[in-house]
Amino acid sequence: KNMATINNVVSFFIEEPLYNYDTITKSSIFLFTSYIFKKNSNFLQVNLLKLLLYNKLSV
Image 1 (cartoon, helix red, strand yellow):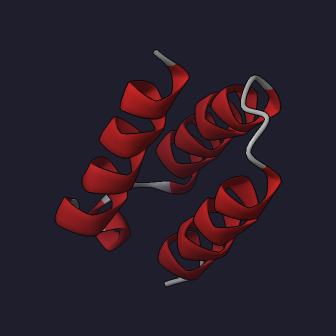
Image 2: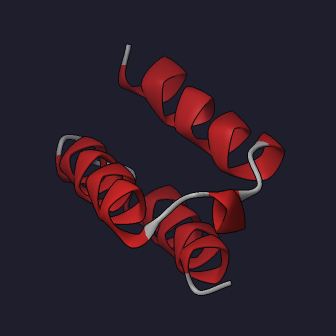
């Protein structure tokens, strides 16, 4: 179940141009994603996603 959620998040960040969002929305997305990360035990994959997320949010 966790994997499906994480894959959805990845799809979202790949498909959505985040620069269209304002800072508050980005923060909300980041908090939500961080919550998902904390519930996942796959360390390598979590860190890979954090990198992807960081690159997207810093645009």
